[in-house]
Amino acid sequence: MCGRFAASTRPEDIVELFGVAQWDPEETLAPSWNVAPTDPVLAVLERVPKGGGAPVRQLRRLRWGLVPAWSDSPATAVKMINARADTVHEKPAYRQAFAARRCLLPVDGYYEWQTVEPVGGRGRPRKVPHFVHRVDGAPLALAGLYEFWRDRGHPADHPAGWLVTCTIVTTGAEDLLAPIHHRMPLFLQPESFAAWLDPGLDNAEEARALLVPPRPGLLAVTPVASAVGSIRNNHPGLTERVTPDMEGALFW
Image 1 (cartoon, helix red, strand yellow):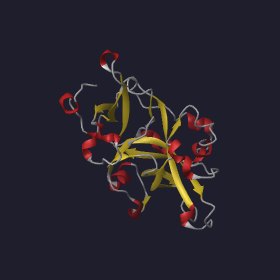
Image 2 (cartoon, helix red, strand yellow):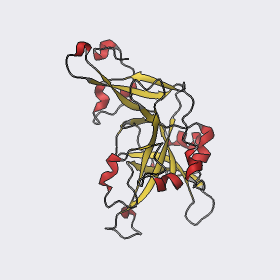
Image 3 (cartoon, rainbow, N blue to C red):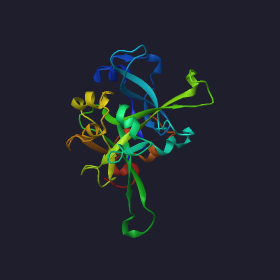
Image 4 (cartoon, rainbow, N blue to C red):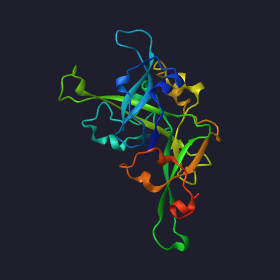
């Protein structure tokens, strides 16, 4: 799964790396090394601009935690931060977004906690954090879905009446990550960006063919300090490797 990640790439660099043609600098976000559910995130997506025409690749600010269009309340968002690749095409909460509203979330990497049993069976298991990132240092392009939700307490044309949210698609973990957690976010390579973002690809079976993770070997795992467990902590040091003497135990 993916419940916390880091996103510090400059919007200008995202625009260049992902071929974004339209973005509003006022919608950008400050770097964050501890993004949590319901936080705002930057996403790359393609939509037909106002007035019509061909779809345009855009950089937009969304809220992490998908709220289905038919939901009565946005309160369920915190439970919908991830969508399983094997069922995303059929689950009522995700299937409409999967068919037509796919996006990419550029992140530095994500955090995952490994359950470590106590030596000798005494004591309580520990949750040990790790930072998963690309070996080459490039942003991870996480496969995501986005959805529009209208608060019917506001007029339909009122900006405050609309909430745009997203979720991250997950798949089975590759061998490197399996000892930490059995699932991982699905990330895509540049050659798959265009097809994934294409709003014209509305055939569920054809879209499912894109739910294939890249070959193993592109990711690295870095053990990090337990400070990342608190959302009050947010600084670049959260992604840095810790050594046994720094945390008091060797866990990777």
